[in-house]
Length: 252
Ligand SMILES: [Zn+2]
Ligand SMILES: [Zn+2]
Image (cartoon, rainbow, N blue to C red; front, side):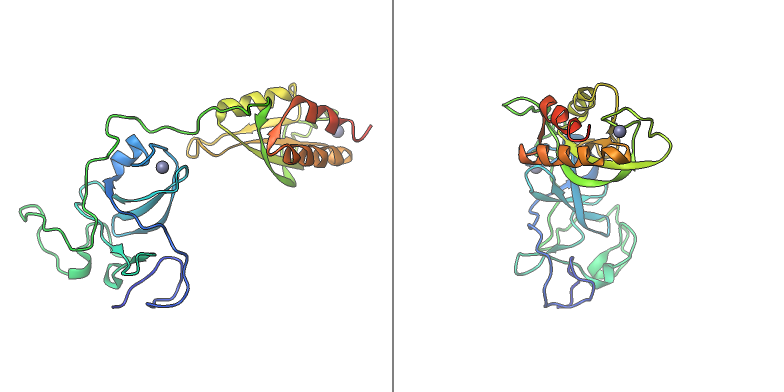
């Protein structure tokens, strides 16, 4: 049986590929948006496989997967591979528009025909968490104080001013560290720790659970940024007032 597997570019039934936790159930796209992950209700995730009106959605919180069907579809347009480690997608369905009949290749009229489930394909079902709105990341704070701040290291980015000396940096790129924070509210608290200089919130409506706080410095104060990265990393991805004070003291 020929198939196309996610994770490799060439079409083959063997070879290496990235295994994806196999999805078991299928929910509609509109219910996924409203109620989130069928298992835990989290609203953010990724879609590593998408074809023929069907996607495989992977929850960013619990890691579980489900099929997501374009509204109107009754079953997934592809199924799991025989070994259960990936997905086998019929070649004929590649690149076809939503609602294509897929493996049969026939354009039968849909409306009057009663849906006959295809063996091995997940069937549309009511969302298991109907009635409970999807949720994002909770506004958790570290038990020992401070805020979560997962810095990825030194780079270049835009920011308002140097977090050490307050020099205006709004004209262009500056030395920068960016840290993932728990949520928008937590990010606003982290920005406030810097007392009105050096830090800004990077919040995007489309990705409400991937919020960053960006901190910049002038060039001479780059070692202070590096120190701030080291201190927050050493604290386990946590930032506190004391880290900012120590980092600012690295360069007089
Ligand atoms: Zn989940
Ligand atoms: Zn400075």
